[in-house]
Image (cartoon, rainbow, N blue to C red; front, side, top):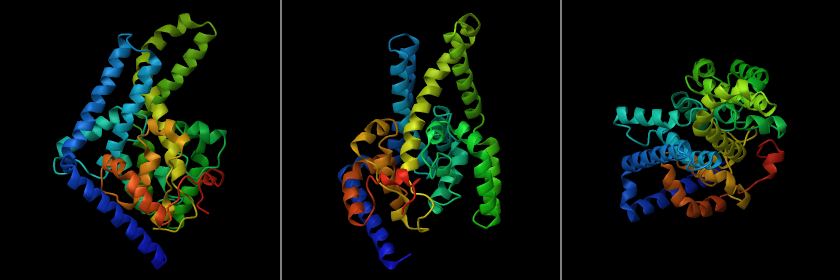
Length: 338
């Protein structure tokens, strides 16, 4: 990596850290990180419960309940990400594990956070490479097609439809020394257990629900009604909100991360900022991820709400040192940088 690039990365990181320090000096509550994290955790879960109870009692329609829960689970995703970096209750393992369980049980269609923790740290070390399991799992680096559109929200379908090709590529990367043996073993464990105990059963319930709904549409409702009645609360409260949230998040993250031709360790080439006006509907269900996640690559150990507060000033520094903004040409390049 050129000295000029290293200097630019350092200047961006120092500039963002200074903005964070100024915010903490101005708002003393930001120094109480554990309290902030647990407050957001508690209020988000309370809001999810309230939304579901209002739907259960026919106060709000299904679509409103699904949208509300999708919105509030986006807070839990950001909290999970911070927990993976051990930003809350690091010295209090019982509370830490409670929060890890909480952010998982309300977002059960995703990879277990205990498995994701390994692959997220791996992602920071190998961002944009063939072995960046976390981002490749959500379609980063794929050419745009109907297949990519289908697999974006559905991790199980993504795995099933792409397994032969990705398996061949990863095995070759392991043979070439790009993936260490211990990491390869961890990948096997992740494939077997990473979406248990909640993810796979709920995905199967979703497919069952779609099939039953189709049969009911063609007049077989007498036979399908009992199972549809059983499945519907799970669909409204857990499955549909998280499929919407995952579609928005995975669409944004898989396109704001570059893949395949970036210089190893060059943080400037790892991500772009996606904050164009038309991304607002996506950001509504992934907490403005495309506008703020690139900041995290430069300053890792800061909570998500601080990135939000610092975004405008951080963007000025990042733009000045060459971080790309709204590089929609990368969609045509299958997320390649060049």
